[in-house]
Length: 135
Length: 286
Image 1: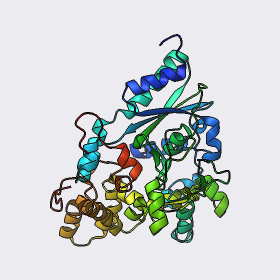
Image 2: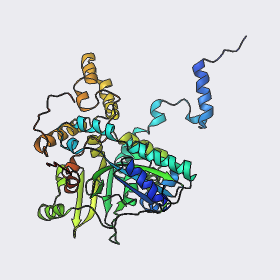
Image 3: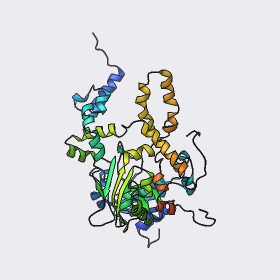
Image 4: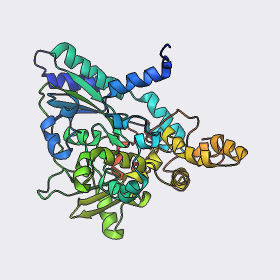
């Protein structure tokens, strides 16, 4: 009996696995598990990751009075992994999941904010009401 | 090139002739204190010694005054030769001086919101401006808000180094802070907080994640953010109109446009920037 020939897609998959250099345990995962961390891990660390990364940036005056301000935290994923005792890949996944994890309303509010600012503070611009114009 | 001209002068002249508003040079060694490992110029180019930073104004005076944010930011991409200048300088360094060079522009991200290299730090270390209270934007007394591109090279060039005095806070902001505990940029945007003491910035706080929702209002990624809500909508008609309807006015129209930097409210009220964008020359009327 002749051997069943793998499908072309299966062959591509196998070749991609060889080239990826990943451990066998990484193969066959769901897309969620490939890109994200377990929800309980995400919920536990999300806030801390955001507050310690670039999402919240803080600088203070340097003690020597120089013109360069000193950054406070704004940690890289590697620095965060040391601070939080997590591996770097886990930190990166949490950060990438969290950076856009805001209610949609925030984006609506952003557009309204800019439009309101332009109506209330035209700063020399024409007094044109753009409320009903297509964006 | 004149026989008396240094290579640094040649680089700067070339950039300015191509339309740069400002150009400066930073030493790679200065980045070690400012940037974490993995995000320094020599993490991107082995043996890098210098970073040439080109600054270019992002808007015309007329654009700053326009009432429609779409008009403002769309026109920006048409007028900006910034990245071409950076690439031309890289070509000069490679072809005439035999040193490797790469460019870094604002669209180059590592993962998520993290850039491969901070162009703000590049500009600051090359003396093109200093950090402002307005989200740490690098502010130039002469040019106000600038957009930057960096050319990293293995060639050792004489660095300009950071400016000697801070551009921010302006005298008007110092007076306003003393009176009301706020500044024009802080009053304009709640992503900005800070303290001024003795006429200098004591502390600057920037809610970058909030700023991102304003500067990226029409980024494709924000439309992607809407996708879970579209998928979860049970009614097919409502789902359809959620995908193609009014929400797109706020988010992405059409998908794929991907315009960045769509909020400049902090800079519209900044006294330094307002001085810098004033019309000059004959017939100036603003």
